[in-house]
Image (cartoon, rainbow, N blue to C red; front, side, top):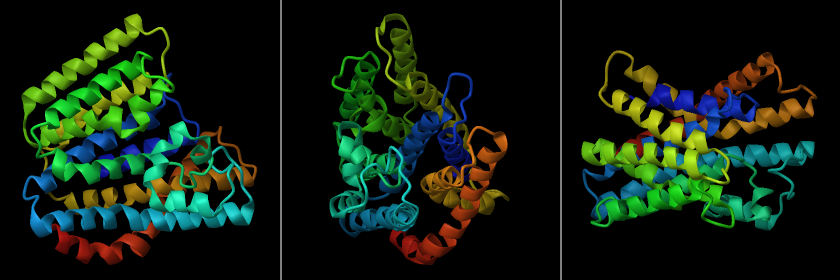
Amino acid sequence: MFGTFRLFLASLVVLTHAGFVLGSVRPGPTAVIGFYIISGYVVSFLLDRKVKGSFLKAFYAERFFRIYPQFLFHLVVALTFIVVTGHVSRFTEIRPNIGSILANLTLFPLQARAFSDYLAGATYVPTSWSLALEASFYVMAPFLLRSRLFDFVAGASLLLFMLALLGKTPPQPHTYSYATIFGTLHFFAVGAWLQRRQFKKVGLWAVAMVGIAVLVTLFASWRPPHVQEVIIGGLAGLAIIAVLSKYRGGRFQRIDDFMGRISYPVFLNHFIFIWLFEELGWGLSTVENRTAILVCSWVFGVVAFYIVERPLDAYRRSLRS
């Protein structure tokens, strides 16, 4: 039910990194917030069935095999490209070495790139910081989603999010509203509430988001990056996911599933093609080149799916069951 929408979100991320802007809004950050809400919905659905014993181990194994093999594959491809071409960008200023490669392999440190110039210059799969953020949610989800403190923690995250947008969380306020689990956990929470049909909580969250938007507009003396993007992503993403959640199965389900399966490698692979175009001297300012990058990402996403993910399908299904 979410597959085509996930590919649409991944495509927005690709186009944004290729230079596309919609008015004053960069749609990539908006799409990332949509991914957070979907993750909360899906993980809640998985865990509400059972969270004890062997299922808990199976949940962690299933999530691991969902995200890590593709990430590892794309990390190897990216490192190969960087070493062979010598490409330098703000994500590759730190040349690959044992320390930087280990930081990438362990994934979780990449969430701290907003606080570390070293990690910021050694994130060889540039979108992997958000993957590290989602992985942090996966680790805590089996305990947090069944805890009586879940709503309190989600509320605290929303409060931190508001303070960040108001510029009250030094040293880098915007990181708490977008790039770390602390100020974004409430996006995962609203996805979980939606899945659980806890519509009162969903409604209160939506009202709070509108209120935060008003507060930021009226009183923020300094606006961090992505203010309108994260608010639009939260409210629009919630509305679209609420509608899509009502549609299950149907004649196009297999196509939708396939679209969802290639959305993840598209999300991971597109910087390789952006870097390739830069190395070839092809600018990113034309519609034709941006479209070409998107198509290349889709095609390579299909290839990566069949090479990496398809062979693991049977095992992942056994873990879910």
